Length: 213
Length: 255
Image 1 (cartoon, chains in turn orange, brown):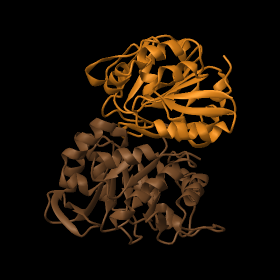
Image 2 (tube, helix red, strand yellow):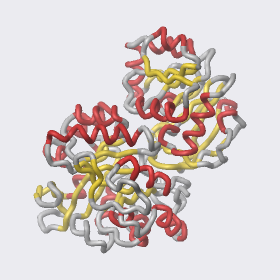
Image 3 (cartoon, rainbow over the protein chains, first blue to last red):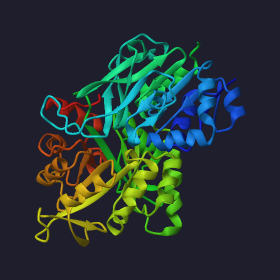
Image 4 (cartoon, rainbow over the protein chains, first blue to last red):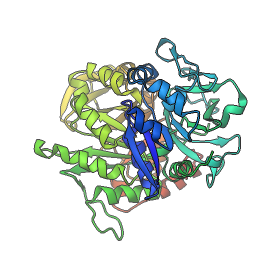
């Protein structure tokens, strides 16, 4: 039986993520929610969820000494970042007057521009909220049984821009073509919420649970 | 653009049970929120909204159990509204597995609540519900009402939407009280006016009687999502039928 830890730093979608993992895990994987060093260290897989503002996220991580722990576990274990769990891996974000990230994947976090129009002349509202297509830009184990262009649920106002193209695993169009998944070695981090993306999302979580690195 | 327009069935929950005679073929228990939510999920609903209409305060906590149970089985976004008064109420619902919290009266009573809620939990989970009615008392011609359309507030609905967005709301759930329950279609003028006044997504609500009304809400009302109750509940139409029709009108949908 393998253990999957969902890192607890007070983010609001924590339970949703854990519930979806429990739903797909069957009795082969144990899902725990924890902020305890030992539990995170001994887990086989790490899920780093996130929602809300990045300033508060980084602050909570530091207060709980989770930032160094994440950097440590990210080197060796299958690691799934979700939403802010993707954004905070970057070097720096424009949010909250400029916030330093964990600097694990080289790149920046930018805000969607106000009043950008789509091809019909309609304003692209911010947050980017709803089901959008995820176009896979490189092969990955976690794409197994998921159609290229499948829709996932997004809700965010900021997006990542990895420096290296090789770190981009999928892109999505919302007036700009932005990185919706960044993957690097044992890290797979999504801007969308697999835990809220029905079949496609559950498939992705299932793939994560059996991902061998 | 490939962001899909959303279709959101809305369920009224009283004391932990879905009310207003939801009617599905072969459903074991027409009042069970989990079973109904699962049906809508299978039909392709993009989100589900639960409106807690429980009057007695002793039964308030049953809504938390409902959300907990649904969120363990249905993996699409869940919005919960009705009786949310403070940050603790929001936290309890989010912890139970809700993704978004819809706030109406509490925002009218104290607009600062929206600033506090979005700062604490993030704009993405704060939906402001606006019940608007035509009125001569405001500049735009629409006035904000509370208590199911009974109490006028004197607040201009368009101005209110703008203010709520500025204070950190992540989305507006706009209900026309003139149209609600009439099955005559959305108040498209109102919907369009609000949608064009704010830079956050707007959900149109109130008055849907046909599938074409849903498409009108998107195409003419410029809404980002459409919410409906009875049209789906009574088994007249499925969410899938609605999406098929919308696609025929060249509206992006998740099929």
